[in-house]
Length: 243
Image 1 (spheres, rainbow, N blue to C red):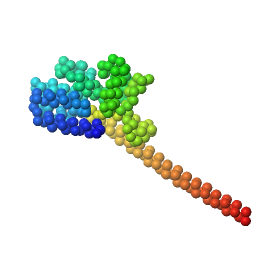
Image 2: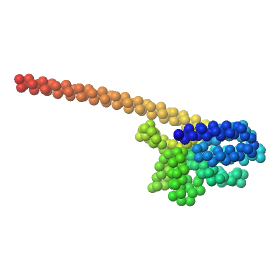
Image 3: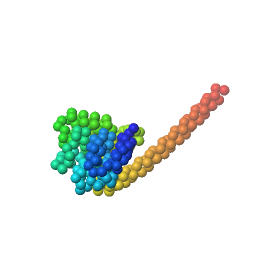
Image 4: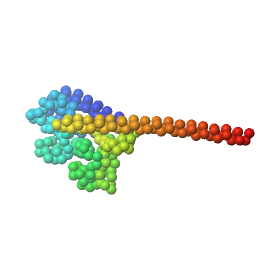
């Protein structure tokens, strides 16, 4: 089961649970959702009426916690610790994973120094262990660690099409998606528009190469036929001379 299917199942599970709860009774669900290793999107839970109603109530911090995991990073949590609940280890791990996803949204190359600063990691070994075990092995980011350049390169060579795109210099990145932040929709539409343009251009390029391959194949067949005909003519000529 891939990460998208796991997410869909988890979202459906938590949305159904949240719909049947009210007020502070939602607290265990928030803790479970933000600790779950298969869940990285929270907008659907935030949209549940009983969750949205937590605004300006004694349980508003539960809503703030969900918003943090939907849109925030580890740095955002550190800057707002005074008004947010203390996170348990599983939540800290999840928020740091989400932080890597946020950085990977707009950067193909993530320098180690930037990652260590954003994740509160003090040495390269600890950072690489985190990236390998908690990001790559879990399937939320695909890429490679470049120890010489001290960076994480984000990409996806999971199928032939992606390899083809890279071969023809089309940038390909892979990271599990996060919830859209307020005001991010316009940028997302612009990105999708650029992607469609790139796809159209790539399709034209592929069609041209197929046409070229077909032309070369026909030329090869014609050349082979000409050679065979010439060989036959030579054979006949030699036969006549022998006679």
